[in-house]
Length: 141
Image (cartoon, rainbow, N blue to C red; front, side, top):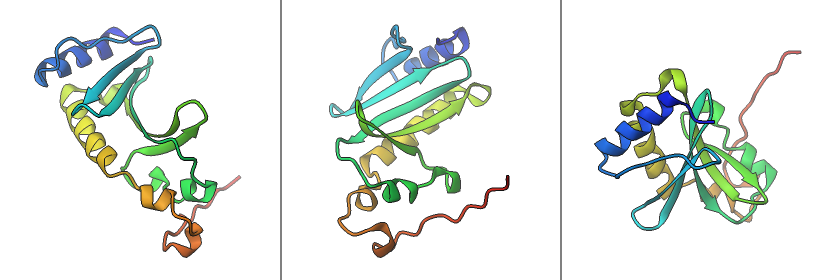
């Protein structure tokens, strides 16, 4: 459920970008078409705003998905679902959300969507042979 604060940021964001009225639907989503061909969805819940967009209908290998860990950089995360395909998404916690932060995040996300890391995800070679290295993570139990 979107809240009044996120709604006010979205309204102010729409005004600053001259987008007209933006509002969330019954699924707490606001769908945008950018440059006539790039679909982006803003999803609101009580604690954050998520920017999301479809990258591809092609299913990448699990190894390829793991090679793009957003834990190691500030790029959007990538996920797969049967319904939506391969998507990129970026969460903005409500505590950090301002119109300026949203403008910057949206600009960065749109630029990333124009050049997603598809060569790493759809290569015929296994990730280990394509020059992409899996991040080394240590977990303590």
